[in-house]
Structure formats: structure tokens, C-alpha cells
Length: 65
Image (tube, rainbow, N blue to C red; front, side, top):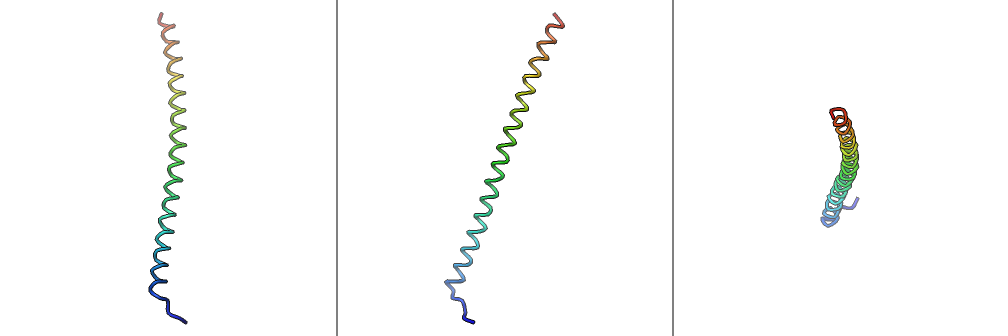
């Protein structure tokens, strides 16, 4: 079996490092998308709670008046 040249060995190491970096970048991008969706959901919940508080405040003011 032929011995691999130093150039081939270095190329394999570079390719492996690039693959690992690419995989990590995809993981981070996926996490970012998920965080964005979660933030949008939380924002919707906060808006709903604000509306509910506004309604309750209005009812309470009418009840006390």
C-alpha cells in the first residue's frame, strides 16, 4: 500500500476542520431560528396579557365608579 504524502494528510486535516466548523455554524443558525420563534411566541403572550389587563382595569374602574 502506498504511503500518503504529507500534502494529502494536511488536506484531510483541513477538510475535517472545515466540516466541523460548518456543522457548528449550522447548529448555531438553527438555534438562532428557534430562539427567534420562541421570542415571537413570548411577545404574543405579553400582548395578550396587556389586553387582558386593560380590559380588567376598565371593568374595575366601572365597578368602583
